[in-house]
Length: 378
Ligand code: GMT
Image 1 (cartoon, protein in one colour):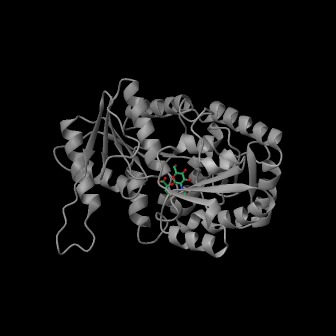
Image 2 (cartoon, helix red, strand yellow; image 1 turned 45 degrees about the vertical axis):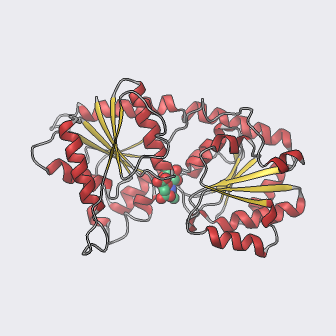
Image 3 (tube, rainbow, N blue to C red; image 1 turned 180 degrees about the vertical axis):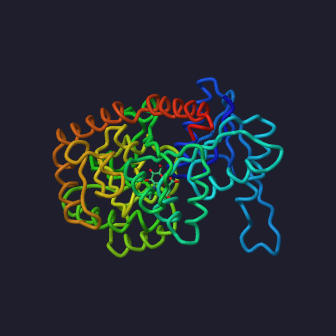
């Protein structure tokens, strides 16, 4: 089939999932057209049947905010017409689902079907905001299919947006060939040489990731055992968190690595992942850690309990409960057999429920189901 994929290109789970999905669909013989404002971060090598279409957003002094949604709609319409798109899969509802709907209205008539995948904040933060809600609801209702990455997100979408259309839950996935336990160069070298434990956190450093909680837990941990903290990613909270680490006198044990591509190397050098988010519709980084046999301590919110099974592959705590996160972290870091057991159960869980092959199979079946749906069935 000729498949279009619209996503955000930056670091972030939705862009990663969209890219991996498109690349796997191309390996399966489909023609895949990525449409985005710049090349998706994980689309970093040539692949047969994969093409990238960049959306240019012209500016004009009158525009306080350049209208990306309109430029995207125009680009979708152009790709749909000239590349004969049969299906357009948009990741993250706002504004992608709206641009897709608009693009289909642009003459000459277009028949491509639209599938919208909800990733989380497109519903839980942005979508339910009164400034966007009516248009988010309209765009979703106009999609031919909707998927959500967790049961939590499906229920929330129904409850908060009053969507009446069927929502298929298709979880996120990870490439278990790439994300696995493997021998990698040590990092940070000093920690490895001294046999210190390594704790990792990966995110886009937005307030909802609660970076300060990571620092507070680490502060207690480094008083109890020799350890270091890897902070991977970047975003609005970074300066504040660096300042917090200086104030607490722990800056020399905290590595602010910024955005990184070598996630598997970093995970393979880590003993524990901390993910204390205020909300998380899925938590793709937890899955990546589990695939590399790294136990995860996360919060009991959103879709995280569908990913991290408490007491099996890590532990779940209430949001902001630093003491419990610390207790579980210390328990794991001081008990290597338990840490390893949870790590291997995490890997097994990923292989059983979240492997690239099985989840892309589900997307592919869903694509065909939507393509073959007749008008009467809609
Ligand atoms: O808004 C964000 O946090 C970014 C968004 C994204 O584009 O990656 O993250 C959401 O989608 C991911 C992929 O499905 C999920 O793993 C994240 O849990 C989800 N973020 C939130 O719900 C906060």
